[in-house]
Image (cartoon, helix red, strand yellow):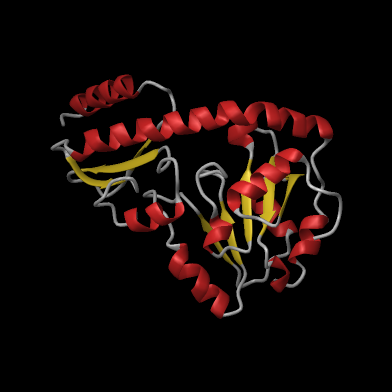
Length: 238
């Protein structure tokens, strides 16, 4: 990939996700960013962590299969983040991480990381080069914000594990999804892709209900969150 050399913060993203090069760019929305990358119509675009109920794709299977078909593999790494997943080491050509969780809602920046063999996807490197890069001030703000973000991320992951273990034992809960639990259907894929935790989202379903409910962790008070959740379930007669 041509263009200017990576900044120090961009090199950090590259090291964490296994990239050849990263650019921090002005992104807007996820959809807008992906459209500007002019990806092939058959590109496989998957979140490293997400969905409803929350899950983790098995890139060990999906990436080789898509590559064998000549398709581009793009990982949305926003929720897991570069501190929690390295999808380029699992076969993705491109990783995209929106940085609102780091810098605050509306920041509008994203880290776009290219694999070592991304040039096999025609036009991908050139499309990334054509994106508007972040300013020096925006990069400085990102450097300052990343350490606190990683601490929040770790705390949220720990909190989610506590909540998941609580819900796993609750008699009113008929369905539970959290990839950190050994009996979760995505646990094996999650253990192969994620590190330093399994994310902040816990989804559960109550007996007699078809829809999933979500607990988004991150307040830093696992005991308090469990107590509030217990009170909520009790009010609903559970």
